[in-house]
Image (cartoon, rainbow, N blue to C red; front, top):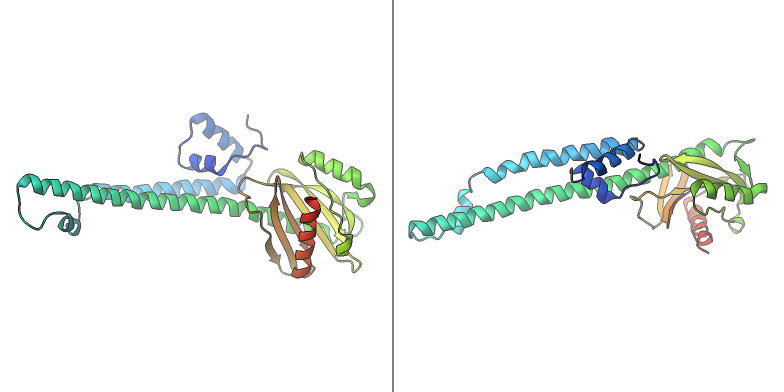
Length: 265
């Protein structure tokens, strides 16, 4: 039985799309995909896309060599019949090579687009979850967090145990934010953590993190926004992070860099 926490590489997913896996490996990926509804239809669409390209391009290999190619390859002067047939064979080989190159190019393009799309879907889910949880919990007055900052050691130990890696709540006093606490959440069928902070003006900021997916490789900071909500997201070693708040973009950028430094000290 495949674990729901198992993650397959992009290369394995592409091999599944192209039916290049043995039955056992294919079954393992199909079982895992039952826990990844956001990817199932997308991968199947790309499989149909590649099959459509093959159906479209394969008949080209059976077509006669165009006269313009024969005219280029065949010698202008007349010669023995054997010479003419040899030139025709050369033309056919040339056209076959061109056709194969075009087909390979289209298939590679499809696989590249698939890779990009998988990565984009994974990152989009990460950011959407972070923004959604921020919107849900930051307005709370009585229960904004599950475990308060007064039990910070218990909070970080608990979340580290659930995420199966070290998780900390970075100190942000120098940026004007104090820790309120945190909670255990879910993202992509994996446990996730949210830490909540607040400044003197009552503005709240959340740090959302979970294990990164294989498709999430980009380590640089990226900006995202939704209305008046701003965020930065990035990948660092085993985890993916998203900072979300209603504070201006320039301020949240400074906080994101402070968090990154605190996590890597």
